[in-house]
Length: 353
Image: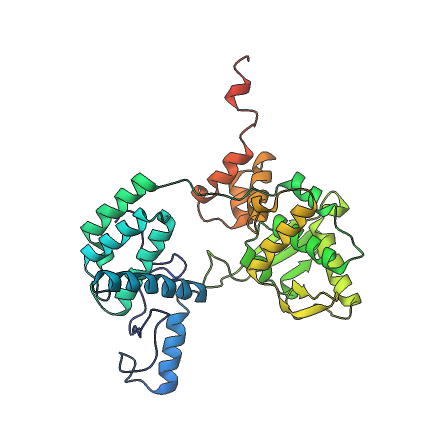
């Protein structure tokens, strides 16, 4: 099949040996009469724990939902779902395409079906020629360019943070979150996953340790440097320093815990870290206050905004990739292209019009 649809990309590779399917695919099971039944209870439990850790909890939940849909369709059509034949899977994805499902959704459901069969030690139908032919036809006839949210570049970000009030605790936190996320070219999960100890101020700026990321599932870790900004209102180092001081002044020292935490309606800082969805809501709320359309922006707008702004400023692709920890230039290409549309080499400005 063109394109890998046999995994989620994060865990990668083959499903752990010994994993079994119990009902829906919600992760490798640990009990019952499956391959792990011969192990002692505690050891079987640890085997199952490590097997589940091969993919994120969100991925297992997505697989579960996708398999429920597939099983419901098979039941409606009177077809077997596990094991499923290649013709059944080909018919299923054709039905999804006819119903208007996006190719990305169909691809994910193929991945779920593939994993379900691997876990059940059954022949995997998703790699069959029939499925490949239908999948490639769907991609050719129904493929669409991915819809991207707007990049929150330097000028827009400056406009957003200009409206924040340093006398309001939530504003102080959001200034730090937005500027650290932008300057560090951080993914949402990376940003909310930071602990206070992961941000260390030095003479040169702020050293941010990203302990786990989308492209670093084994938590090897990476360090990102955030230089002092030229302007105090948009300096990520000063913004972080201000948030630490403000939280301490509110009676909640951040040391030893999450860097970015929830604040209740009474203005009290909590002990629990923000989650990924919080970043999008903060970005959208702050851009709306700055007069921008919140529907155009999301949590990823910080990361894409940095890449776009850096490309526009003439930063090399290699340096942008290092800051954002992209593994390939292809992943960066769309952001770089947007940032360099009107650079000095733009031919439309050099033909004498």
